[in-house]
Image 1 (tube, one colour):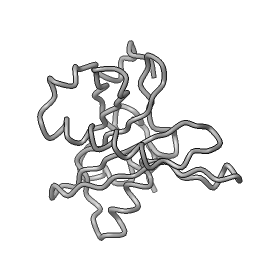
Image 2 (image 1 turned 60 degrees about the vertical axis):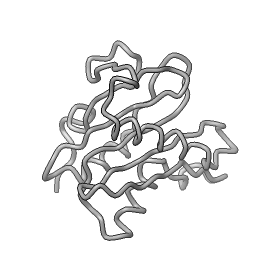
Image 3 (image 1 turned 120 degrees about the vertical axis):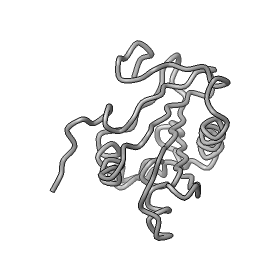
Image 4 (image 1 turned 135 degrees about the vertical axis):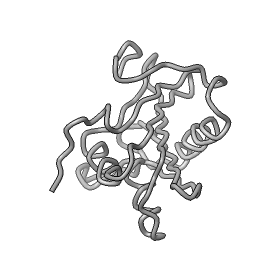
Length: 147
């Protein structure tokens, strides 16, 4: 996602509220645990539950590419496994020269599954930039699949 995309607002990291800055920093820390020997593309995520509890996740690749898991889904699965299913925000961190990395389609749908009662804020973080792309899951996936 380039920084001129109309689905997000570019905000300097230091202008974000302290709790959002903390969430973004947690996503950057989570990248360090990434297992990405095939793509060398480390991604981290930090998820905030409605009760304030935080979960992190990283991408985990596999030689059989299709069974790897993204950072966003890892964080959500950890939270759901702990019986938390209501979220307010997720920060996703990855490094791509001069750009922000947006959740893939599968992750957008996965996040959207838990946004039925309230929209979930999404913060896209590139640790090499001092800015954050601020958006929401409804902006990233306006017509999510609903059953």
